Figure: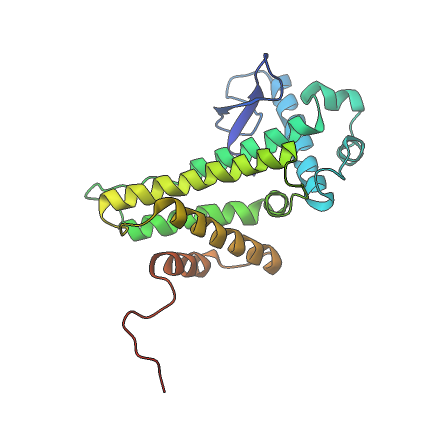
Length: 238
């Protein structure tokens, strides 16, 4: 959740430009040894982000208002502006958190003698990504149905998020090719196809609600991605 992964701070030169920095405990959060008032500020920032994510997911970015976020969070307008300069900067922080979390959850393949088989490591990666989706359903809905128009500045930001995500997949595919575990392929096309499939699975999981066993879902996604759906050289049954 928002308490577990990354801290997003903002450049003094450009308060809307997020800078991702690692944090052991929470987004916008407390590093061990800091003062308790910093902990309270981090929790307040986290609260605003969580409420804003829900509002954006329900209403779409443009229909959502700062007033709605403030009301649901139960804070004063001045308190909101202590943490964020605009609605846009809130969305930037949310997208930064999502990308940092995905990056952290996708691990490189370990080829050391005692490491699990690569297929098992791929499965673990997929389960971690899917668990992020089920743990943060509002964030997943926001990323799937953000309610933005083509050419919109914020739509372009979301497109950049997906571009970075695609690059993560491309990197994984290229690494697999180097290892000999992935066939030679058009990596950008394969990565785009994989991202589309994953987005479809995310939509499926959101429709199913809580309690889905992610193991079989990860198995099916990987089987589809790695082998397709056709039986090699099979003859149709008559």
